[in-house]
Image (cartoon, rainbow, N blue to C red; front, side, top):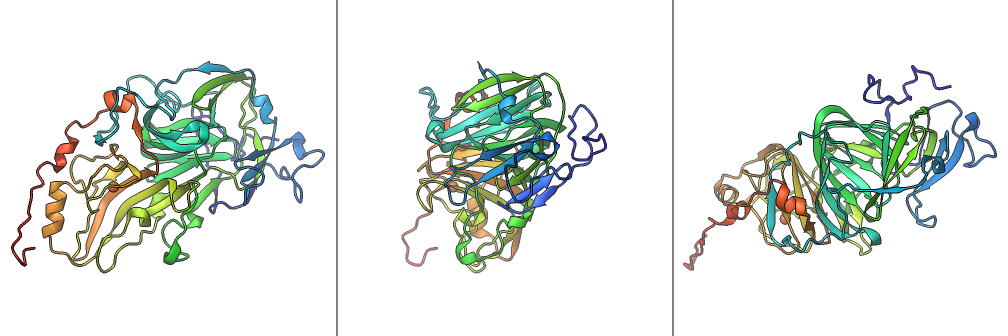
Length: 451
Ligand SMILES: [Fe+2]
């Protein structure tokens, strides 16, 4: 029943990669998809006997009584309980979870890093994850962690899921394939992917080396922000989010599954591929999004709005209007405001801001914040344009000006972010970052009419 030419059949990266079976458009839709005709029950979820001898199983991402509930019904070759055996703890020393407060590390301050270089050692999605900051508490499902991934090797007969978190993946270099229970997502720079809590997958290198950023969300799932007075269009549009169609493997081969659970890693051994979902329906899915489809809105007469207008996705906290995490995109756009200091103003903020550069040059920091690099402006720590950006923005003629060759993002959280020992001592921290503000001089002149 699983024909070799079937485009829904997965292949490992070690074999030629076939045609991608496709995606379904829409954010949070109640999708349905089947890799074999008739595999998906119609009109009910749990028939007495499923077609093809499949097992029906529900994956719930919210409590049953959430409104709306987020869940997906999977019809698979074996139930997930067969993809799990006895567990042994394993150590992934560079993947940290909150709370992770190192008494020898100072997190208070303004920090910036050059790109973390690739290692001579072969690294997979699991061994190549490098935690930079943590916030909140993984055990209470609040907060987040930020990571850099450095991946040069595919996972082979090795699978992973995080019970702790939803992962937002932001590639900066290379191409990856996420072969998941619900289908295949291929990902490259200028795209993002979301891998929901509990979703099992394998990560393969399509083009390496691969480097990028991950926001590990311990809390409520990412959703589209309310647009308020902006109305029904612009920003991220639902149709530009893509969920994979069903694809499955039927392979009997010794395999391992690694599970992240309450900040610890556990491994179990099984005798087959667990990517065996032949059909599924529901609204709890992985998905990808092309950042080039984000439609920014901004000032069209004067002043500079808050960066919340650039929110792609938001993960709510229990406090309305206050995000556990906002994912914010700074992409190419026109600047037209009159008599306005156009870059971000100087500020300090209760939210903590971790930024990454995907490509190009960021307008408030023309130097030093380079592709693959990151910066952190922690809770209530002042920051803003450097001297060069301030002088240019204060003295240039303000005609319409297009910011081009630029794509940066921010993981912004209501919680303070703590640096890991890796971020403070091993990653390429720019010790002189604070000096970018040191030559800003006092310009004050009390004379009447001085500007
Ligand atoms: Fe800021």
